[in-house]
Length: 470
Image (tube, rainbow, N blue to C red; front, side, top):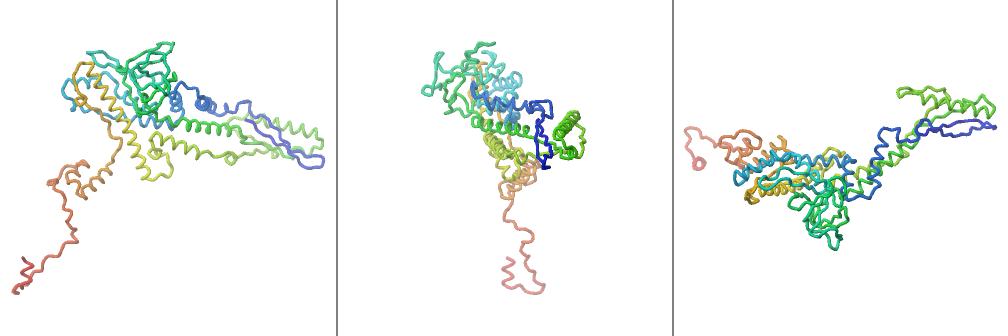
């Protein structure tokens, strides 16, 4: 970091002239090394900002998740919602089907990891590809997750071939891992019936694989597809501001004319100023972090506030982060990151966030249903799709005790619930005759009509009194 030293001397006509010399106050020539982590931040994010020669979009999606905390947190939040699941074995037609599915889920496959990874990959890539490992008569023994960015999907055409937009690949017949690769492991080819491909928003989706072949309706669409440029712009802004702030002078030292006012020879003044400057520099370099220098009164340290000289890009970054949250359907207000948010805004944001998460979960549920069917088929157990136990995820919404009580009171007071139904909502025991609905015409005690007047003894009742008594 360069420090500016301002020196004052008197000319022959005794007018003060300011002479500026720039001297390095620190031994390093690279300012980014001086601040911990800045060089690593910029070096790591440079490929994301500058490189556009990716094999396919999945490479840049990986970099975006690795570097951007907003993306990383949103992906983890959504993927962990798949951790709470259950299987309704009662739907299974017979004991053979139920026992086969129970063995697959509990003994053979790490189902928690499979579900969480599937939801994550749907968020990042729009696809989750797994190899079914097993054999006939034994069923599926394992699910091998395949790297999405190394997979190519082709139809029945013999290789090599080109597929442009005029004749794209529209049927997923064969999955190839590391196509045309000569590395360790080489190329592996799998028919479509050995692959569990979970994808989202794949219909009418155009995708170009790493061999420049166009596909249509074969690959799922990633949520990140519209975030490539905003994330790059975000890191451009961050890195440029960090570099600019670090390069600007934060402090400078002035030596006033008092240091040489008693010297009349200009050469001797220059030598005197140079000596003082060298002493100040050597003093600063010898200081520890907890020491403060003490200089004569003609040497002063000045600090510069760079906030007024640098543009504030906080609003720009905030708008970019809001756009990221909007695309991912993980609202910032739901995570408490939005300043000044009202309850209504948070509630509405939670509503559409839950809908987006439930959409991902429903796609996974359908894929798991196909997985169960493939397992039963390999075991030789005849079945229909409606005979298979179903997977379901726990509700993403959490209803507090206060919300339950409010729902029960509103339903009971408006005649939608019986008393026992309302008590069941708040987990209280049933009341006697609680199934009878409340009479909504009942008035309050203060509105009860007065009892009929009683006549004094000995006074014969009149015709009006008789009518009132009847």
